[in-house]
Image 1: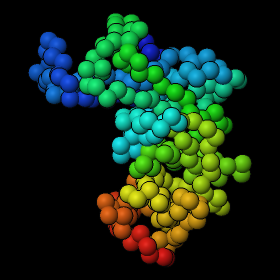
Image 2 (image 1 turned 90 degrees about the horizontal axis):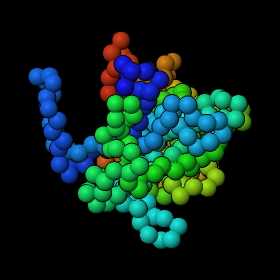
Image 3 (image 1 turned 90 degrees about the vertical axis):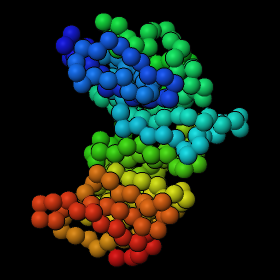
Length: 270
């Protein structure tokens, strides 16, 4: 597709399920069949219509909940992904928004083609299975692209966290339900968040880098606690990760030109 037209080579989100491998004829010694069945689950278009829900890029995805999320009718959606999709404003500007796609529980459903062939054609990208349709969740001024971050849902699946600037241009932590509704601002920091983030396994707190320190944020109140002393250079913004027991937070810092791994107690105070 890229050789045909680079504008048609669009970023998408896919999944691999243990249904069966696809075994096409080999054209290179390093080609292999693998073990899983892979399909795209997002839908992109080369030229999104301004003001619509169409996107030309789907990225920075994350699973919703350890066991999915609860719908308004009380039922549970077992498998779902949240991702960032690039829409276009009425004036043509790129506006990154939160999208959700619900996925089937039955493995066989992933092999059922929808309106277009699952495998794509010579002129079209692969398409999602039948019934797999993404939903736009936010209608905002646009998620933050810096720092780079991935959408992360709470363990119970009730809320999706993301980064977006406030009215003063400070990048803050926000959340929104996978069922839709208005985004809610979690933090009200004076300094921009500098990293990707992760949830405490209990769902009570989120960790990230801000003001050149590792911070722990209480999700219910938005209160942030500085866990490491402010340094001249900030820790790495790529990952700030909780231990499985929720007692430690791992992060990276550059020491003499090399990134090194550090841990800090989640209950300490700098």
